Amino acid sequence: MPRKPIMKNLALLPSFLLPMLAACGLQVDLHAADAPALTPLVRVVDLTVGESTTVELCNGQKVDVRLVDLQETRDPVRQAVRSAMVTVQVNGVKIAIESGMYNLPQRVAGVQIDCSITQGYNANGTPTFWGLDKDARLRLWPKESPLVKPGSLVYPVDQRWFATRTWFDNEPVDGGTKILPKIYYHSGLDIGGSERQVRVIAATDAVVVSAGDDVLPEYLLKGGAAAQYGEGKSPVAPRSDVVYLKDERGWYYRYSHLHKINDAIRPGRTIHQGTEIGLLGKRGSSGGWSHLHFEIKSRQPSGKWGTQAGYAFLWEAYRRQYRPKLVANARRKSFLIAGTDAVLDGAKSWSATDSIQSYDWTFSDGTSATGARVTRTYNQPGVFSEILKVTDRAGNIDYDFADVHVLDPNQPDHYVPGIHAAYWPTFDNRVNEPITFKVRSFRNQEGNEVWNFGDGSPPVTVKSDGNVDQQAADGYAIAHHTYQQPGDYIVSVQRSRNDGVTATTRLHVCVTEE
Image 1 (cartoon, rainbow, N blue to C red):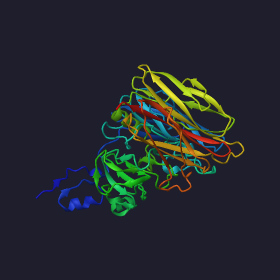
Image 2 (image 1 turned 45 degrees about the horizontal axis):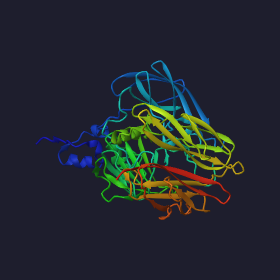
Image 3 (image 1 turned 120 degrees about the horizontal axis):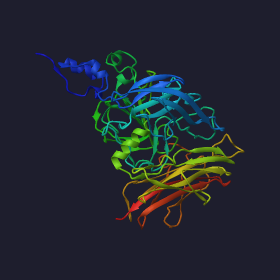
Image 4 (image 1 turned 180 degrees about the horizontal axis):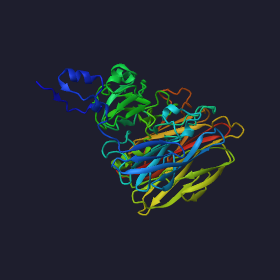
């Protein structure tokens, strides 16, 4: 009796099952199993300065690309790369592109193009994160193409975009107590949220490769059956708070710092997009702040595993799901010594109708300014949260906050106190319904956190543990607040040391009628 072809999607099957399927009389094409069932729309190329190549896009269009120049700007405190600009020539047309840092692909000469990483981030950083051997990595799509196949990716947390702190690709992680020579440039996307309340969901249809310390064994092998069936060594690094999923593209998705992993998430199972993986937390090497570390790993042009920068993908997925009209963006953090300037940038804010009319800033000292970009001098150490309000032609408004970390010039090798706040729920908050607010301070056990909920109600004082024990179950101090009127509220919380150095953070809470 002839063998029948198997109709299942081989890309989502664990490789150890393939010989079993063959033994059951099912025809298995190992080459097809090795190839992704869903070819990514993005095309990725690594180049050195002066190098040219021709890239065939997902629609068959051929594009000539040349890396003309690379300029990286480092801060005077840590010598960390704070901005990397590449000049690229696309079909003879030059364009300047900034790598990472909340930048989206730009359109030029019939294509969309971005730069996800440059060589400078390897110096005193962690080269294995990206697998980049040349000067820069460029990614290209046809001009009007989606970045990922529509419907194949959703936002991995059940909360509003920019609901609280984020720490995205390429941003130097400024944490700990003392500034160290080694620089940790972030790869992947840290999405802050309220511990034990925010649901983490599968961004794609996928097979569960690992859940906590339980992992499909072939994903840890360098040879043997794994090599035979096309997997080879994977980028999987199991840990008790981590889940790895693998999708049809052959991309691996890491979900880290989970407070709880759902029992249904077990290695070998195929799950659907939107399946709840667990609850957002701060377990593992989280630094003590509650967030999801979401990272995509894939084979890179170097042949190595490396991060597939995910910011643009998640932003596109979020827009499709929630259809926002206007999104303020002041995300890039500033890091400086007291007495020097910070450039605050709201130009990455977005309007569905491309009709932003105004950028209005309100600063911690009560002064204000207008314009997409403003420059300010900070003379006092602390952490400041500056308010950006954007307004479009239709009168829609949105808010975001620029974090400014200012070091004491008398202790330039020590971080100032930090603070993180989050709230839940972030969607559909209504009048007379309580909202949970959580806050935790860092590098400061003095004083208390003081909340101002932005509605004229009296301040509320709480006290977190100051991150003495990163994994403390009660590390965040909790408050509850109920709004009596609909509106957009700017919530602030701060905590000061005895010497007056203060860390402040803010949240934007939208409340509607019952």
